[in-house]
Amino acid sequence: DAGVIQSPRHEVTEMGQEVTLRCKPISGHDYLFWYRQTMMRGLELLIYFNNNVPIDDSGMPEDRFSAKMPNASFSTLKIQPSEPRDSAVYFCASSLEFQPQHFGDGTRLSIL
Amino acid sequence: GENVEQHPSTLSVQEGDSAVIKCTYSDSASNYFPWYKQELGKGSQLIIDIRSNVGEKKDQRIAVTLNKTAKHFSLHITETQPEDSAVYFCAARGGYSTLTFGKGTMLLVSP
Image (cartoon, each protein chain N blue to C red):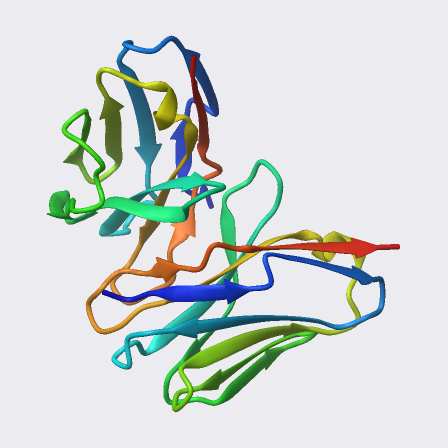
């Protein structure tokens, strides 16, 4: 049974470039979460979707960040333009309502 | 909103010893408390969880205790093994709200 799949696993790019992170949730899960993990701030929730609809994006740090979920099997997190302080590990997770969240292996993003 | 504090930030033990990680939460409405294990380069995996109608839950070498009055919960790992080395996160959730995570504890088990 495939878990949450994230791509790419690593991304290194120069500041100012657009970055797109991708996530495929577990089939049948109706909740999808995007997190950012840093040493200083730990795991922070950026945004979450229910049935492909964004429910709470209050964790999105700035307008440079945007997320979409065009269908039940795919979501993207975009950063445009990227800045060095965006360097972190970004995790996607999915779940059924009131059930535990299942995490992907993350995308390690480095902005030079 | 919810605030979750986790201690210690790092914990070193010898193989076979017990390890205890503690978390406190601020929102008395929180009713679900999972623990996740994150190995290097991997996503977090749920290892045990507890709901607010239960005071303790055990699964082999892992146990979680919850004190609702004091608003704290703890992870206990007995007979630690080197493969237990990882970062452990606690989290809290209330009602329809999302999980709020602690900042993590890096556990190192030395052979």
